[in-house]
Image (cartoon, rainbow, N blue to C red):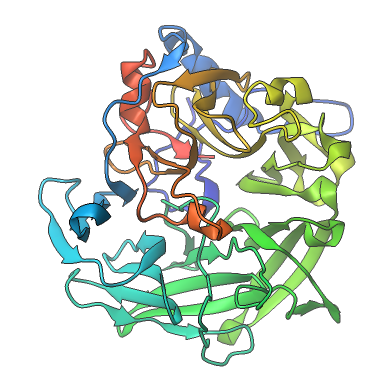
Length: 448
C-alpha cells in the first residue's frame, strides 16, 4: 500500500508515515473527500483497535515531576518548597542519566529543545520575562529578542510572555531551518504589562538563540487596521502551502481571528486576516493537502451546540463550509463541565497510531476526560486522582505523553498555564494500565 505522508505541523520526513487525521469522510458533488487517503490507513487499523476496551476509570498511578519532553529529552522539576527544594533536572537519554541545576530562573512558562540539541526556556522573574538558552545545561545565556518593530524587546515588571495553551513537542522546519513557533496565551491586566499578545519564532544559531516577534496584536496592523486579540491560541506552519497560520481569542468578536502570513527576506512578514468573529474561536490546527482541521473553543452562548472537531478546505475557509469530524452538543459537554453555567470547551487532542484519542478540555469538572477509540466518538471517563488535567505534552521517542494538573491556583490566570511547579502524570502508562494496551504502541502517533 502507498505510504501516506501527512506530517502535520511541517515536520520533516523522519516522522513516521501513516498517521491518520480523518476517518469520517465527506463527499458531495461539489467538493472532493476530505483526506480520503488518510482514511484508508485508519480502516486497516480498526481490527487492532477493537482488541482494546474503553477504560471505565483511568488509573493514573504515581505522579511524576516531568514537565516537558521531546525526542530523547526530559525536563523535570524537583519542587518541594516546604523543604527548600527547587531544582531543574535535564536528561538527554530519556531518564537514564540526569544533570541537576538549582532553579534560580524563576517560573518556567515555556521550554523547547531544538533538533541540534540547543535548549531554550522562558522564565518569569520579578523584573519581567527572561528568555534563556543553553547547550550544556550548566551555562545559561540570554536569548537575543527582537520586538514587532525590530527593536530589542524590553521586559517590564509583571510582564508575562511565552505562556502557551499547549507545549509544542515537535520540530518545524521552514526552508531547511528549524523554527520554534510559540505564542503569548496571556490575560491583559490593568497595568498592561502583559497586554498585546505576540507571535514569536526562535532559531538556534551558532551564536545562540535569536527570538523575533512576527506580530503584536493591538500594535501590528493588516491593511492599515490594528488587529486586537486577548490571547493567542495557536501559531503553526503549514508545509503544504508554505503559509504560517495563527488563531486568537477571546472576549469580543473582533478578538477571534484566523490569520495567514508569509515570511520574507530580512524577517519581514505579510499577514492577512482570513476570518474573524466568535465562529472562528478555534485552535490546534492540523493540515493536509488543501484542508485545515480545527478544534473549536466555543464559549459563546449562541454556539453552545456547535462545538466539535471540524475540517474545511483552505480555499473555501468559511464557517458555512465546516464539516464536523465530531459534533459535541451542549448536553454532552455538560457531562464533564465544572458547572451547568459553563459547558466544557475542547482545546487540544493527542492521537496514537491505533486510533486512541485523548482530548484536553477547558472548564472541566474534577477528574473528567474525553476519550475515543477508532473514531472521534468521545465518551467521558473519570480518573482516580480527583484532579483536573488541562495541559498535555509529548510524545517523546519512547512514545510517552504526559498531562499536568490545573495547579497551582493563583489570582494570576497565566499561573495555571506555567509548566513548573506542577504535578504531572504519564498518560501513556495510565492508558495502558487502564486497558488501552496499544496506546502509543511503537510510537507512531502525533498530537492533533
